[in-house]
Length: 300
Image (cartoon, rainbow, N blue to C red):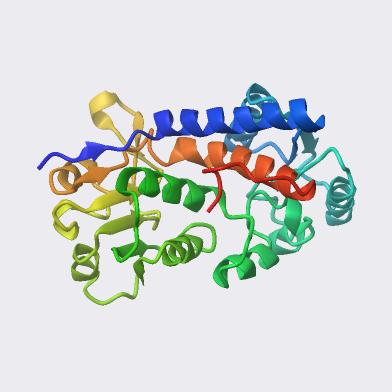
């Protein structure tokens, strides 16, 4: 068996196209332009690249982008004051504080200072609770992207056995909640799970989000299962030359692809969907703020 490759780049482009279409309708019919504010504290190189990419794509789909770059030694009081300002700004519909924050700042305090209706990362405790109880919430971007790809590839997920490997608050737990919402039978596996290989091998859907390079191998996969690899890990690549590295997922792609029915690659799988779903969440937040119809196919 040779697995179908789920092309995250192509799917993300489709999602961005849907976002752009809804933004155009908001402008034409209601004179509204969705706005996304991104706050970056410090000069972490990876975060800077990510923020630039977010800003570029925000503008490309027709939304307003507001970037706030603060010094690494910014006080917690000043950061909270900026968030309070953005919470009350009617031109801002989505707020994202880029993580990680410098060590002197309390991430939980900062995240929970964001208006839950503008929390396009879906990390606020109110959104976590709403998702867990099956109510309308802002959903974390990466799990939302995974759900969109699964629905697109499999259609109805009802009755399927799903295993989520990893129990993080950012991916594992919300992913499990979303799969439950689509009537899957869900198991969360983690470092203390007994016979994790056997648990994984029973699944029709495997979502690997554990942060360990190439941990999941082909013998973990039920023949024909759909594998969503959330991991992004950089490992040594001596075949490319001394000191060179390459990106791999939490799955050993080659061995898993020999068994699975479909699989996401790394890079080019889940990664592109994260920013696409951030844009989707922003246009959803804007629509909700104005009491307008939410964009079809862009929510959980």
